[in-house]
Image (cartoon, rainbow, N blue to C red; front, side, top):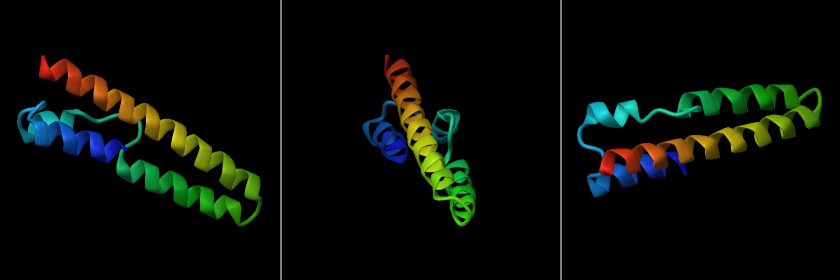
Length: 78
């Protein structure tokens, strides 16, 4: 969802220029999402509850990031 918001804002011309797209940011970029999931998989080897907690945290933060990007796009569209 987070990547889709950035691509949609670029496609619709809501955010002008590559520099503005990079400012879009958010709580959890792609690299951070992957590292969090990898850490969860490693922890899941010892206790599956840790894996479930990390997946839930990643889902929550990814959705908050998408909401941040939507708000950023709306602010820059006006």
